[in-house]
Length: 372
Image (cartoon, rainbow, N blue to C red; front, side):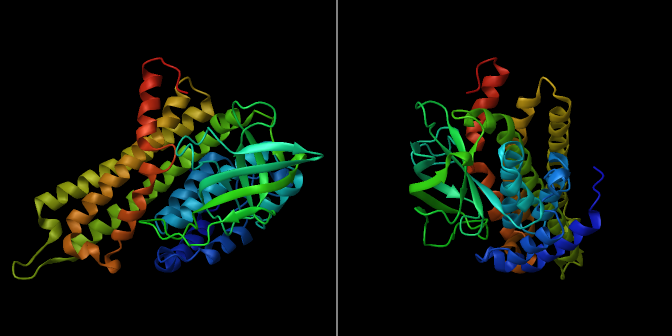
């Protein structure tokens, strides 16, 4: 696509690249997020009426994919921020929308819970009225940017009834909101500040509700799922692109001195790199077609949305596995640059909706069964 801020995102991607190693050690990408805010790219999808860039999901996918080539953690933070922003653009106050547009507010999603795990659409946490306020209780299993986001788009059971869900805008500093003390130290995406969060008597005004009481499921499926799946797929394609480029460069520059040949001269290595290139390009094409389906309101839109994350997550795991095989023992070193990508790529497989859950949804859709 034609992106009006090409040079700007290249400059910010260079910042992400400089900090990628320390972010992989657990540091939050503060400098990169600051630059995204100062240049207006945190407000990329905010409406021009509140001071944003007024661009949509295709532009967000472009930014996230470009960042993922340099730092998966940074890309995932921005992915979650854009998903939250898309929700707030439809249901949030002008004040919060303007703060995001000005690059002064980072938001995120707080959906998955300890009790319902990857079934993110089924919160167990509650919301009860208390005068003009609502009191929230619940345990979220993972919240990206948990210590650094200014707000969470939080899900709960409805105030009235126990079916479906309701969404709320919850400030990170709200009384009774507790984030786990231990910093995230997982296999990959170590710098995205992902932590459990618990609400114990968190009080928010009734006006903090996003959409109708009981309308959370519709927002999740109609807004959040398309944005999250496409942007998650964009993270995966960015990681694949980085792995393919780094592997090809390593193969061309590294050789067998006693034979006077390079790794790239091995037919097997070339075949692996060819498979990496094909898989990367196939998934870029699928993301592009998914965006076209959404824009055209095609009949196969939901199918494409479900396929995009499942296919890209699976392919990223396979492509980065091939990168490790081609680069051999050197791949275990940090300086080659593929082992971090290998680890980061695994997250998509288990991040809700998980790849296995998506396969089930896709199968239902193809067989004409209700997806949910």
